[in-house]
Image: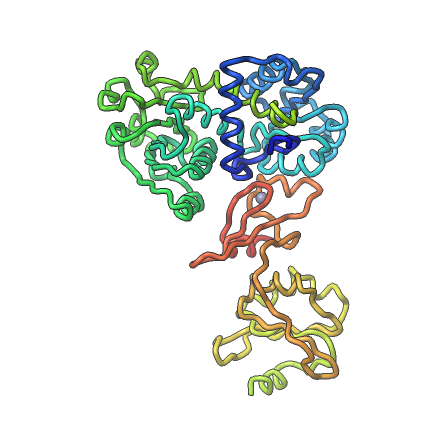
Length: 306
Length: 155
Ligand SMILES: [Zn+2]
C-alpha cells in the first residue's frame, strides 16, 4: 500500500491527519540519521517563487538535490508570465506538464489551493501570502520530536506576533492534534485570533495568556519566539512595548533542562546574541532541520514507499 | 390570517415563488444576490410589511420561477426563518425547506482582498459552520474564517 502522502498536494496543515504528521517527522529523522541520495533520482521538480524567499527556496532546492533530483524554476515573479497577466491557473497547467512536482510560493492567500486544482502533479505550498507555510510547521514538529522525544502533551509558549504569525497559527493547529498546553505572550494588539482560540477550545486544548516571558519560563518545554514587527505599530505604541518581548540569557535561569528555544528566523533583536551559547538555543539547528523535513515531505509525495 | 394581509399588500401570484418572512432590510439584497430580476419575469417586492412575530419583514414574489434546492438553502443564510412557497394556480402547492447549507459556492465574494479567488478562474467557496452564537464561513482558498454577516455584506 502506498504511503498516505503519495501523490498528494501539500497545501495546508489542517489537511494533515495526526498519522501523516508523524510519518513526515519519522521520515525526517531517518533521513537525518542516514542520508539518502537516490529518493528523487531522475525526478525533475519546479521551484516557482512568484514572491522571493531566498531562505525557503534554497532549503527546498538543497533538499531536492541532496536526494538526487533536479530543479528548474524562478526565484522572483517579476519576470514571469504572471507579470504579463497570465493566470496562475494557466501557468501551473503548463509547468505541471514539464515536471514531477511544483514547489511554489505566492503573495496571494489561497494560491497553492488554486494551483492544486489545475495541476496534474503534486503542488507543494512554500507559502501563500499570510496563509500557510506547511513545510515550516513540519520542520518545527520534527525539531520538537528531536528535542523532546515526543509530540504528545508538550507545553509550549508562543511569544511575539501571535496575530499575523502564520508559523504560530499552524504549529498551534498541528500540536492540537497531539494534546498540548499553550502560553501566549505578546502585545495585546497582536493577540491570537479568535477563530484559532475557538478551534483550540473545540479540541479541548488549554491555553493562557501571560504578560511576560519570565513568568512562563519555568513551566515550558518549548519557547517559540517570533518577531514583533515595528511596522504594525505607530511610534508611540511601539515605544511602550519595545523591549518587552525580548529574550536575554539571564532570563533562562529557571528553565527546565529540556527546554529549547525555537524561532522561524530571521531574528532581529528579539533574542539577544548571548542566548545563542546557552544549551537552550536551538534555532539554528531548527533551520538546518528544514532541509530534512523537506526531504521527508518530497520523498513521501514522490515515492510509494520510503 | 396573515395570508389575507399579504393579499392586501401585494398582488396575488398565479404561479411562481413567494419568499416570505425575510428579515426587514434583507429583501433587496436577496433580490440582487440571487439575481431574481434577471429572469425578466414579473417580480413584486414588499418591504417593511407588518408581521405578527417578526415586527416587520420583507417579502418577494417572482412569477414563473422556482428556486433550486441549493438556492433555497443559500437563502437560509439571509433569512433563517424564511419560507419559500411554490405557487400554482394561485394556490400553494409546496413549501421548500430552508436548511443552512454545508458549503456555498459562487454567490459571495471572499471578504479578504488578498484572496486569490478574486483573480483566478475559480468560484468562491465557503464551508459553513453554525456555532452557538454565530454562523461562520471559511473560505476554501485563503482559509480565513468570517462571521456570516461579514461575508453576506460584501458585494
Ligand atoms: Zn478567501
